[in-house]
Length: 256
Image (cartoon, rainbow, N blue to C red; front, side):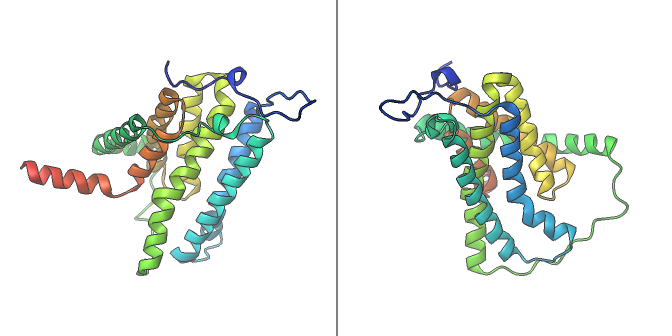
């Protein structure tokens, strides 16, 4: 398939030295999962602590932690990848976005949004069938008004940094560590499930976990088809932004 992920034996290898023979030492399945779990724990540590000990942290410090954690995870993945002696770009599926990647990412995000109203009630029914709903509505903490600066930083974290970091972690590092040993289908399912479960750690309900896993299938399919993560980053960013409902609302209004 054009653009398919390069197998390990097809990866170029960084030369260790003029008189040294180097070979790629890719991370195995369990080591890959361990690195991924470490990244998830680092990203979610503040949210877990805030819920567990009822710290009542405002949005500002939580966003600052998220940005710091995402940057730390990116640094961790780069160091872990370098130790394999494989080029970072090849290992993580990094490439300059092509027009095809941009279009595929936008189309995938639109398809996800278009099926939301159909699938979310189904996911809610599935969760209700297996998990007893809590008695009464869950208490909600009052939301303090956000300053313009906090709002801008929050959009940067949600639309730009989070998609880049999470796609490098799941569709880049984790996908590469699993695909040559488990195959594309198993890797697609595992990375999608892991992507859904991280949102449970973030504090979302099981309906959102199923929905995020569904989105992960689209993102993983883009990784599989294109051989890189450019399209999945774009789809992830567009899905996290408010642009789709705004654009579709304007389009529907114009057509009617």
